[in-house]
Image (cartoon, rainbow, N blue to C red):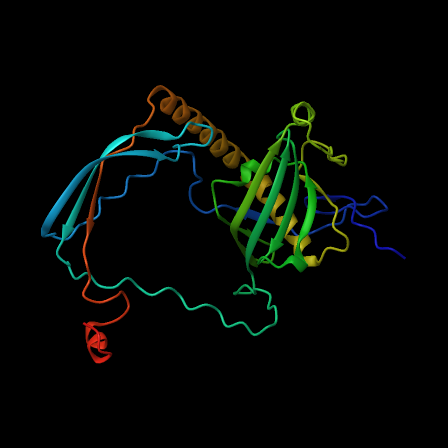
Length: 298
């Protein structure tokens, strides 16, 4: 007999086929600290430069094209003054070596998370009309534990933070680290018109019925494992507990982005002049001078 997907899950427990809601322990989910509200971070202090001893200098004009400050804006173009100094070797310490590549044993080893109740989440969300989300989630990046659901939440609200925790009625704590979440947005009215106008192919999503109100989701994966379902419960519990904060921070980020975009349109940025220092080392990076002498180098 072919396995059927779980059809409906509500926060607080799965809805069995006979229509009686299962009882699950009360959960408390929270986001530690403040959520990002779009305000600019304090500027980084300028780097402390060595006391360079300049041997020669070249000054020239350079036409540059730089990336725009925000997506959708034109690139930053202009002519800058570039000053290039040849300096004495300041004898700076070598940068740390790159980490050694992992040893390939020839077998795929799934990434395991430690401690037991700490989970890394990789999320992919397509949000439709800011009211329904097709969500794919895998714990620790393990494709065998990926789960796909339709949710009645706008997962744009699940940005602006990277960690949260869920505490069960027995005091057990599950800590989550959202390692990455790719978000795309579609409008069910405008997207078909756009693709038709541009002679593109488009398959409208088949969004299952989900009532508005309490967080709810439909699992479309076949035979999802217990841990994946628990993650879905915890994500939706997070919205129940922290939804107002999440929405307030999201709206603040949208407002800040709009203000910043308007500023860049009214005050197009110009590229800045730059100064470059370069020198010749007496030995390559990562090789000591005495090693070069032993090998017969200069």
